[in-house]
Image (cartoon, rainbow over all chains, first blue to last red):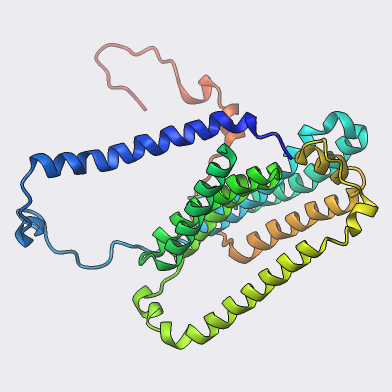
Length: 124
Length: 203
């Protein structure tokens, strides 16, 4: 069985976050119930003064260029994921492992240079 | 005790967020619930001792795949109310898929109870005393070097393919020319003149 005791502080942080966030959500609600008056009215939610009813959905379509940025991000993110076990066991795998990773990086640097040259990283 | 508590916390949160993914009205909310589900799955993987998969879930799935899902949801131009209308029509198909999944799970539990074949154990015995990440790192960059380099090539092909398919050269853009900027000296931009009194400046 693995030793999980090192993760205890993270679990404690999680518990603190859970307690604090539920406090901030439910605390004002409870306070409201005790002190405030509950009189819902449709006019309270209506537009007034300079406001006007919405013409259309607020959800606008994104440009397809965001998709390219996200794909490039995924690829370099995966590269980082490969670097992680390599960095952990670098002293055991020696020069073979070092050169293996350098070859991997060269492959991705070629891709990076291609993306740069094509102007895929440029926005406007 | 505390492990059981953490397990039940992560498991209930995971199932609750998975239910909310498919029942949320707004697809953007679905993606956000999915991210919460990924985090809880990462917690479960940590409890199992698979640290590398847990970290991968956080780095790759939460960091990149969820962003991609969000972009896809925002880029699609479909009426989601219309999409929901076919619930009854697709119900048999969905039930069939659920049944296949359930049968697979039953098979998996049965195989696990019967004891595994451990084919990989003969080839590469798993050391039980080193952490998960170190065990992967020891093998991936030495014994499985060619597969690893092949993975790099697959990533390269994916990168080039994404650029070829979606990148359009746009006219009229004025990108920054860094070398031009760095090469520029003060005397290229400024001029000292001895201006006589009472006359206009000639530009």
